[in-house]
Image (cartoon, rainbow, N blue to C red; front, side, top):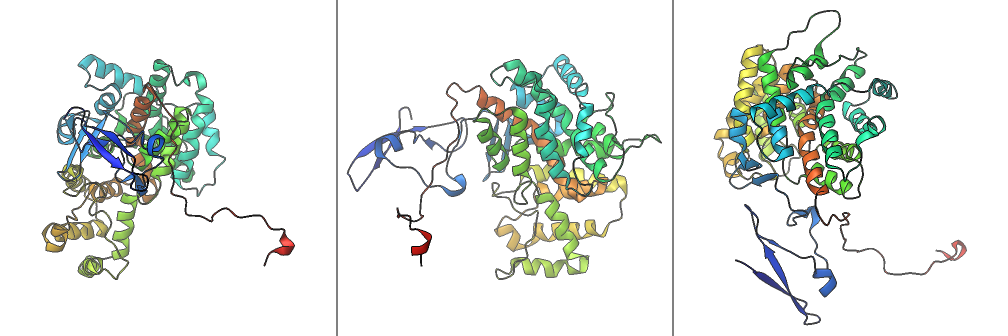
Length: 431
């Protein structure tokens, strides 16, 4: 396999070049096309980058056909069973699992970075009360560089680490602040004695007038959601963070760009779309009709939360989070007709030949949306929850890119199909 190449020939000129083939630890081999333009004067055309490896990375691996997801080589199933979100953050950033002492120290660092600058609270007042929490999050995350500009040397290892710690720690505080502001409620300060997910629930739902008791089952389910969403290879938001970072922008600006990309309903808004779909169906008695509509190619109705662009098999995260979903519903004893609709849809999808043949299994968004609703988190906050979990993936991918020896600014090419060259005509001569 060493020195393997593929020959590309331009039939119009007869010129050929040999392009090297590279192999990674896992996954398909890739053709190195770096010399395609310089030697043949050509670019590749790949809308959506479906066949293009935009970078070399050692963080996350996905095999969509087999339903495999690895963080730094560790199967997601093992991490979900034995680890927690904080340990997973350490793994993604540092590349290895921590010792007991390292884990304790890391937990302490994150806990003591959770507070935000008081001036940042004033920043929220510039938004309308009815602003979407994601709109607020995009702005506030971008503004962090104005408050924490003491560690913005992107070429300094320690500065990048400090920025990572701050982002991981402060994102739940920022997210909870967006929610509290939209409701006209006082901001709740974080508590260092609470674990990561517990602290977020405290900042979301506690009041200074009374004691708030965090539900352990809800906190554990939320921690699992963060862990399962921590990274997912070169998706749209991660690619956006990398592209922004390639311009040597500061990490907070890059994270803000990632938040904006995640906001799209085709990406991070999927679990919100699940709840809206369930609300649209309205009643269990309408589920069969909804399924038939989903099977009809001429009907625009779609079942959200089923199937995945990458996973052509069962989403490995869905298998894990399903149990947590059932535990939360049992623990909280929530009576909600939407949950009955969801369970009926799940039952049909797992048995119906149409869904099985097309591999339209319930995905992670299907179950996470149900969990978040059961916990009491409003639909408008669902994508913000995704931001909290994905922050470690974004900043780890950004850090990996910044350590490359030959970092280049991203500059995708295009296939131009506009008008040919034409001469300008004065307005009085135009017809």
